[in-house]
Amino acid sequence: MAEAKPLEIRRVVTGHDADGKAVIVDDKMMDNVIVMPSGHSGALMWVADPDDAHVNGPVDQDEDRAYRKLPGIAPPAGGHVFRILQLAPGKSAFMHRTNTIDYAIVLQGACVMKLDGDEEVAMNAGDVMVQRGTWHGWENRGDEPCRLAFILISSEAPEKYLHMEDGTP
Image (cartoon, rainbow, N blue to C red; front, side, top):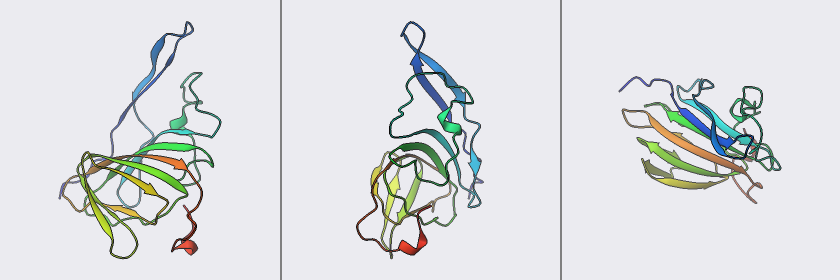
C-alpha cells in the first residue's frame, strides 16, 4: 500500500477590485490542512453563516473563511461548509451523522461509503452523492489515496434515525 502523503490543495478565490472589476483576490496552497488520528487529512475551504455569503471585502488571514474554527464537522446553523478530504488507504471508516445535506464528489481514487448495518456503496472518481443526514462513514480499501470534495448545508434532523445516542459531531 502506498504511504499516504498529507493533502496538498490549492484554493483560488475571486472577488472585485475597487472599480467592481472581477479579479483573483487569493490564490494559494492551503496551509490549514490537518492530519486526523485516523490518518486521513482534510482542509476547510470555506464556511458561511445563513446571512453571510461573504462576497465583499478582503480575504486575508483574519477574514478568510477557511480559517474559521468550527465546533465539529457540521456548518453553523443555517450555514454551509466546503471542505476537501483525503482518505488514506486501509483506514477504518469514522461513522458519524450531521444535520446536513451533503454533496460529496469523488475527485480522485475510489472509496466506499458505509451506512447502517452492512449497506455500502462503492464510489469512484467522478461519482457524486447526495447524503441526507444519515449515519455514514467513508473508507478507502484501495492502495492509493482517495480525494473527495464535500459541501455540507445545514438542515433539520431526520424525523427518525438510529444512533440518536451517538450525537451529532
